[in-house]
Length: 337
View (cartoon, one colour):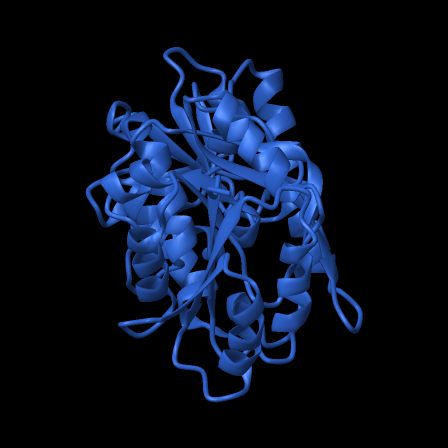
């Protein structure tokens, strides 16, 4: 039976979770797949765990990363896959049984769709922190293409191991890139800026393990500063801003907001005003630019607003204030994480 899709599973020292992950793959309702299990130079029993499975399951292609690190493993897997559809999976997560079938059918039926995620559910041995739950709640509401690109600069809108995508468009834009940034978020931003269609199945099809050793908690490439830098890099190249370069204002005059915004301003952008609701800030001058109240935005022509306030609840209130002044997301403002 020819495979309909290729599962890309890089792993390193994942002996504690690999068996559970591989079992969830074996229990899929769609059985016509190839599994590219790529060992990133493990020093525990991970290799032996996969090798034992591969001896009895010819769909498992057991490979060794010819380079070092997850980016090298992912790009190697792209070149080794024999189907046009790639499904990402991590060695510490679990697929729900219908995941492969539903993602395959969506990609097959919509030739314009390049990237397809799913909703996810977190699981852990202990308590899942409130911040992670808040992030998942936000992410699980970003479903349609317009939702995703509206908030693409807020946070990473996908859980990487929930994704399926067409191989060729990803290879055409350079595959995964290595650097001091999250390789997955960098890929989504490049797909967005090259006009690719992205969406999610509105159903939980992946269980995402949360732990204190998870890469997003420990790797410097996933730090707050790394996300701030990669956002500023792509913002500075986004036609939405380039077309309004001389008519920008920034909502958020606090120290932390300004620090993130400065990563954009040093790339040749300027703000005409800082917007804030704090009466102690209104009337001040920062970098030769005045701090003004939101009512200042009631003007013609209207400026383009970059909202650099990072709190989820505050972003919602600011969005409501902008809507009351007839400002529209992406047309008149962007939310920035």
